[in-house]
Length: 611
Image 1 (cartoon, helix red, strand yellow):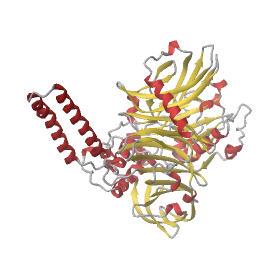
Image 2: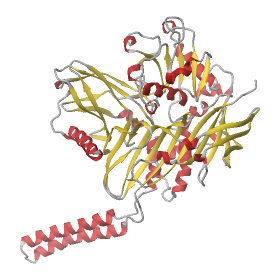
Image 3: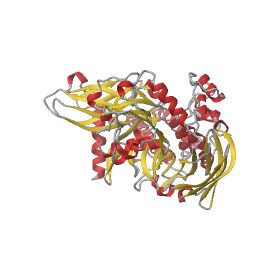
Image 4: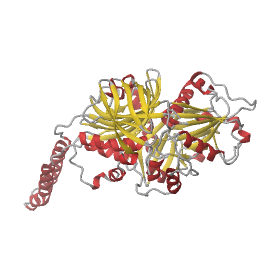
């Protein structure tokens, strides 16, 4: 039954995209009233970003069908198809939301939405920094807020996996959200979001309940996980044009980042580099391209190229002059034609056998991921993977987490695959169903909320003066090391090495600034990994090399000035552990028996400091 549903969805999407006659938007019942990329009209590269589309059914019949979103580069579609089922009653409106993975190249792409009987080209996204928005209800959308961008709370994503481009939220009321959206907002805050609470019209702060009850804390500044809540004694109508600038300065101060007005050397450095473009010593990097190039090299099939070249030469010689000489001997033309067809058929089978033959390879998955702690033993997990198969078939890539989102992570070629909603054990998320030829790779990117009990950790001791002196963290089974594992501690702007000993993680030595740990030159080189000689690296060497990538992604390093802003406040330390991928992050099912990888775990701990 499950296989039938997969084939049905895939077939329906394929039919929509290959139909020779597709009516344009003006000839269909549906109209696109509004398109919102991200949260403020912009997207963040190397992250999943929501795109919310308001459908308007102006026909007399209900629309009940499949919507397909695809990116187009030049004359061809690229990546996999994103599919959503939608129902819009006659004369009604409905929001639908897709969550594509945006890369640096995506800004130059065209996006097209198709359905049975219509299609429309969507305005493309523009890239920008994390969004700063005011959350408003539908009735309040027409009320402008000075200097700030409104965001309709009705389309807030129901999964934390889609909130990577959201940085700050201003809120003056309790949103009317169902449980998944309340949980997603809670997770977004604990992962590192900034929430600015304002007074309601009755001159009181909003009263929250359920998953958001912790927001009732009366402190003016309060930390929750890696996120911070600020209380402002003003209403939305009292906001002035400089509110966003002042609010961002408060966020920087709470994280120990000097403002531009500071007389500290770091503040001056930030001021100098704030407007610099990519290329100021480190030109940014494409996470998917860099990581996938490394993962693919781990399982590249070892074809017998000398034999293939020899067979090619023999094939050419048998066609010409072989068949030509056969014709010169005055054989019947049917004999000559038969010889040509026989040679072509025979060598086609030989090439198929030799080209698809494996030399010790097996179906496997290699991956790396970043796990950001949310609460208890739940994490927001971003994963880059590559599935290599020896037998061609239709495969489903799906994990056991909630609120899952997927991408093929490819912007240069079409992918025969569908990313659509799936319900597993009562949890709703997307899955990636794709046709994978024999002895080939299928890269993927995923993000999900996941429970990983083995990654529990507790700070039991910490001594600090001007720098960290001793740290003792009780760590779960998932932190056990292997020869590739590494551990770091981060405080203020300083990185320390750490080590795992008998169920605990302790400080080892001071390494220096983040620039001393992350090799930006290596990141720049791995954008063009095919241009330098790393073909002979072992899988272990590649996994070690990718620690550099994962640290850069965790700290948001994409240009030189990002190093200056990678800081923590004095009352917090961060544990970073690069450990073997836990079983909870395996692709579910029996299709991929061999799965290997490493996970960068990030957990923040509050500490007590003396003035």
